[in-house]
Length: 554
Image (cartoon, rainbow, N blue to C red; front, side, top):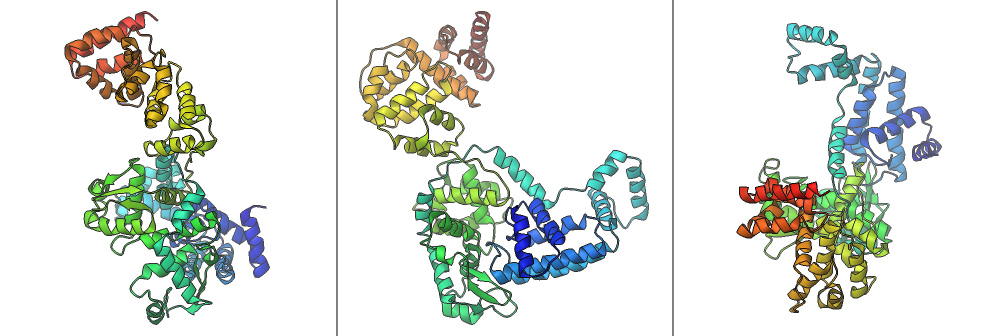
């Protein structure tokens, strides 16, 4: 039995309801709103489900059954405390569905006509036809009827706005590298220190067994807000409700289903509370979504930190006054534990909790976000593969997690062994950088590798950086350079190799003659890149000549 069937049975046990109508309603909710939880509803969910149901050829009886089942479902969730946070306020949801019921009934009186008319009207207006101009409408209909393919397209109708947004988001998410999430214990420990949630939980405990809602509203009365110490701070009540520390019935505010989880519940329960309260606690009165947009842009930047002006740049055309509003928005995010601000407030970095918030919000909207595995359980070869797909911002943390289970020397030896094959040049550059970060602890290993045919150039360079004087080996040094340039070309930055070689001036030509003879697997890609990207025509010509010679030997 799937979750929807189980929920339908639970509702029927509570009160008689048309099982087929309720099943259709909940399956439409799952399909259109991409919700895994049939007990979580927003205002936009009600609107999207109404739109989807309006597309069906409903009889008046079916429309009435759906409306009745919908109201019964909301009554069941509210009376049993089953409405999953964060959801819209119960009174608002019920009011919307009451209006929807009348609309569905009217549609049912003319099954099929409403959906077809709405699709035709939408297509007509999208093409700039004035629906009040009878001649223009008739001409448009005549053209449409002569084009069966276009008619079929119009009758399919446009995707729902939510589906369009979700599909665009999915394209963005699919293009993202896998994301590293900090261990749940680390995230929960940070979440438990969240000051805004402490304030929200204090309010929930003040409410006690329950308080009446403000007359005609979905929050505390002004007197209760004053007595609770939250007057003028509506976000506290909203965050407590969204986090599940409080819940609303149609007339009261009551203890929420997650109040017992905060702050002493298990790690997963604490994180559910934290992410539930995120939107309400970080939204500002001037721009409700600015905090979320800033956090998402910071996440997508794949940078350890950004200047605030750089972060707000892409939002200036979307959010009026973004630069002025960003400061307060980032302070709210910092208070909630999602970002860290520099002392002067000029730079901002996302925290592990902030990454978790973005990932959970994407998941809540039906997106599948790829998450990197725990590095401590990986072999050296597996770690190298993971590093090759990870975001730059995650690499050092992944390496630190892997090295935590090993001694620096043993871990370095395993990693370097995993990239000693000549063709592993892109991964080799990355691994050498990570091992170099271990400092003198691995100097004995670099001495061992100084004569290695593939790793020797790197080993000698690092030993020189440490103040030692290893024996010179020009071939090994050139092999190292091809590793680095090959990695740049493979990662889509051919200009880096071209610019490095151009800086050699007259020495570039003789160097290119040597490079093609080394037998390095990146020689061909590097020479081709230099031949097309070099700012120096003479060097570009020399690179083409070297690439031709290399190709003729294969």
